[in-house]
Image 1 (cartoon, rainbow, N blue to C red):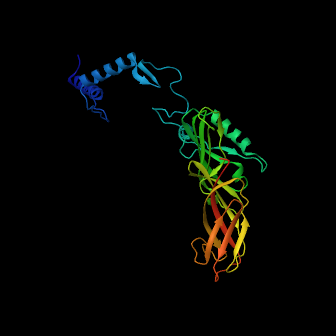
Image 2: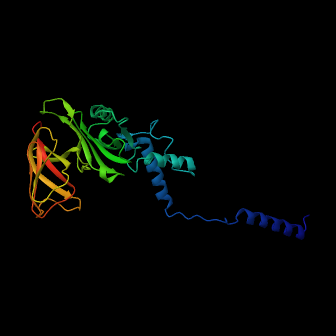
Length: 304
């Protein structure tokens, strides 16, 4: 027979086994949802996966996953993404394009002898790769700024095959900031598209250089030129050739400077500044003279 002591030991052993089986967990998780809510959510997700989603990657309707919906540069939605994966994804969002999505392309003049027409052909090659009604940033160096400009940033806009604009929006050299090129049907809306002459918004105004500007007078381009008119003697008139070919309407002498930096226009020491088809004539008062002077004129051309 089993003794009382053996039965007590057996009961104690069974109690220990039961305690081990029913021991409470060391960590607890309490769901914020009831079992019924969880079942309903699981059912909804299952039905959605089976029927597809309403739209994805440009597809609409009952859209099911396809090969190519994701690529290797996307950051994984589960697990710990590797540093290389994250870096690749971020670089594709904004590589060396200063936030515009693409590295800035360069369109550059390669020599001092390169013509404007050759440069326009280079711009056309870039436009050929652009969809209609799009724009992009470029680093553009047309012949007018060859060897003079540091880093420049310009905006190239393509409306369609017949209209485009390349407009400078910033330059490391402020004297060369602000110019444009545009392409349009010319001389009429039924003519082939051509690049119009290079134009300055803010011409650097070097002595003796003619600048076609973006300004217009009666729909005609306005040109500007600075001419050195030299020393001016008191109480005399002096004529200096301006060297402008096919000069049209002489709009004004915008300003003039003497060697002291005084403006000659509206200066009481200057009784007149006249611009004709060939010359600039400056007339001084009896008490005014200067050892050097410059005059800037604005005009249209008969050829436009």
